[in-house]
Length: 181
Ligand code: NI
Image 1 (cartoon, rainbow, N blue to C red):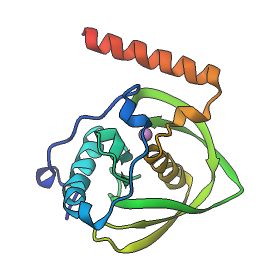
Image 2: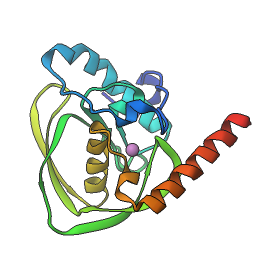
Image 3: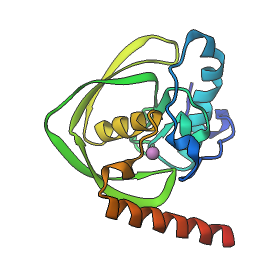
Image 4: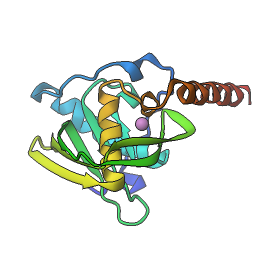
C-alpha cells in the first residue's frame, strides 16, 4: 500500500485539541477482535498525519482509545511509514537527549523536552506480526512521544509548571482567536 499517495488514502479525521478529555485517557490494548477496526483506523491515521502535516499520530488524537500509533519521520524525503499496534518501550538508554517537540493536539506550541536518547520498542505490525524497532535521535523522541499519548501523557507534562501553564494559556488564546475568525 502506498500510504503517501493522496488518492489511495481515506479522508483525514478531525484531530482533538487540548483540553479535550479523550487526550488524557489511557488507551486499551488491541485484541484480535479489533482487527477490522484497526484495518480502517491505520490508513485514516496516516491520511490525517500527512495532511496535518505531522511526523507522528496516536489513535487517541483522533478519538480512538486503541493502542495504535503511526510514524513517518521523513515524509518529504523518503517516506517510511510505520504503524505500531500495542507498542511498548522495552529498553531505553541512560543517556538523555533534549529536542524541541510539538504536537498536533497543541497546534503551534513547541518546547524542549528531555527523554532517553535511544529506545527499543516492541509492537505488532498491521498484520499482527510481532516486531521490534530501535531508534535514536528524532525517531526515539517520536516513538516515546506517541506512546505517551496512549497513556494520556502529553509533552507539556515534562515541562516545569510555569512553562506548561504559559504554553497552555498561549494555546487557549490562539484557539480562541482561531474560532473568532
Ligand atoms: Ni503529540
